[in-house]
Image 1 (cartoon, rainbow, N blue to C red):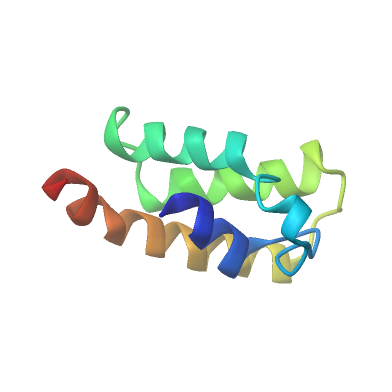
Image 2: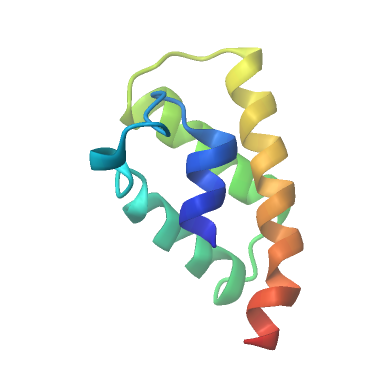
Amino acid sequence: MVRELLMREWDPIGVKDAPEAQDEYDAYAAKAYVMIMHEGASTGQIADYLYLVETEHMGLGQSKEAMDRAQKVAISLTEMKVKFEGE
């Protein structure tokens, strides 16, 4: 679920339509899942993590668009917590 969400809504390097790149964000998805389920991270903390990954780890530079994207995805991820707890 997290993998698909990151690919569909975050995708900072634009690989969502490349079948060979479907695992591109797996490490970030795993970290986001742990943050949500085991660390009790807030939406803001998750957004900060995604923004840091995009702007520093991937080196794509800071922008309002990147921050908006990170915040939107962080909201979606925290809303998924209820679904994860039910599994």
